[in-house]
Length: 381
Image 1 (cartoon, rainbow, N blue to C red):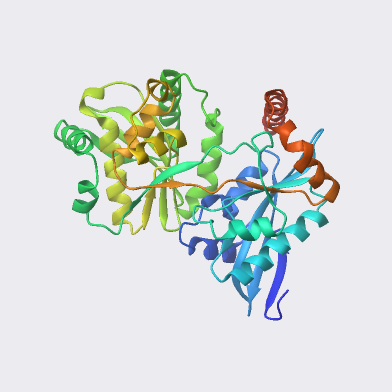
Image 2: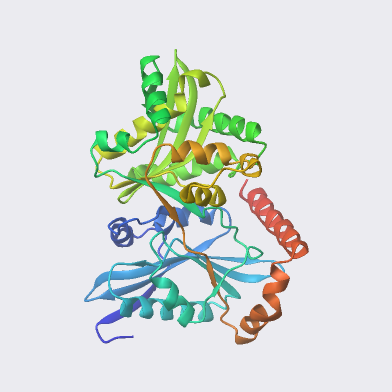
């Protein structure tokens, strides 16, 4: 460790200086905030923070979730971190501290999902012995691509970046009387039922699948104003709704639900536009639509013809809908993993990766992970 740097491992449940630090990092993710750690504790994830200070000022760090899983051992998870504001030398120091932490905690393997703009970290992670993770290792990573809209533009510029059909649908819905309001904890049932209706139409499994998940998130994040609920109404009927994180400089429109009614007057378009307007008015730098189908997004970027096979994908419709609002498509860096034990690391490289990529192993891991999550849920009730 450099002379002017110090490293501490914090076990505090809530840590205001840490939250203040990461909230000030461009593009910071709410999953590195202390309320997320408190929330995940309910499903069996303990948390610790590796914090680097320079002259008593936090300059880098990472919030690590840790869980013991039967048949696997102790695993670690850094989601959308580490959080760094300074040079690559400090980044190297932090990655080294993360490795030392993993060894001291007897972690079997550590999964690290870099932040959105974490490309500069990738060579440093590879240099430090991290390997690209494969899908067979829990936890499952759902977010691989997204679209960001720059809210420093004028409203006219944002509208001008949209597809003509999207602008038309926004104006149509507004003219026909679609109204959008902020909701509260008492509206979560409405939102959740709308989300279930959306998943049923797509023939997909809702993630998360428990209404209490949203209530727990609300309870942890709403005291800081870091979560919001919006509902779009037509003639007094709630037609669609969105659950968002309002953390740092980025407003993340996370989950969405629509009853399927009144599609001819585009309530979803109006809902998204009103949220964009609110996020811009409140001083956020970006709005993040959170999830795109990566294959469809890459096809869209290249201008290739949309094949019939792509149109059958469950998230074809949502992806095309979000891309209609313009913005910048962002493909997230791949997840990495680290095995503190040299023998396990060697086994992972050969023949472990081949085994982990097999369909049979993936099915087994999905079954184990589903059992763990179900058991944690039963224990929490």
